[in-house]
View 1 (cartoon, rainbow, N blue to C red):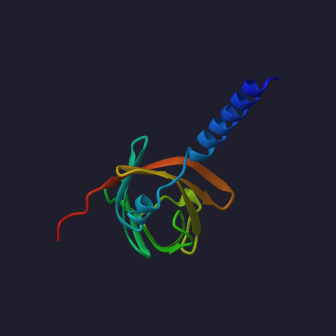
View 2 (view 1 turned 45 degrees about the vertical axis):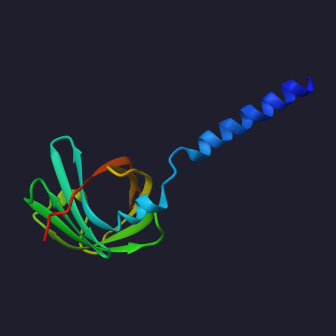
View 3 (view 1 turned 30 degrees about the horizontal axis):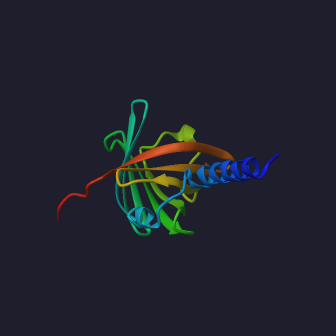
Length: 138
């Protein structure tokens, strides 16, 4: 291998490494906007709307038919833990109850959405997308 081939190979490895490490990174400015706000996700026919303010979160399920109130504890800029404080009209088959903990890791965010991984016990939900909604005027 001559010096030009060696240099080209190092450049390709560097580009590959950079592209792998840049993928899925989260911007600290974007993350700071997720501490409080209004967010929505849709899975099939179920729509969940979340209103989060620092250490409290209320999740409205199916247009408010059910809701979950949780305490939010931020472990870092991109990881928070939800502890369920109250559940109203929630299906019993979920296994969740008062005191259940869900760890949320934000893997990507932009000005319009964020993507996260949810860990509940041994169950993991990957690539859950939440759209960022405007808060109502007060």
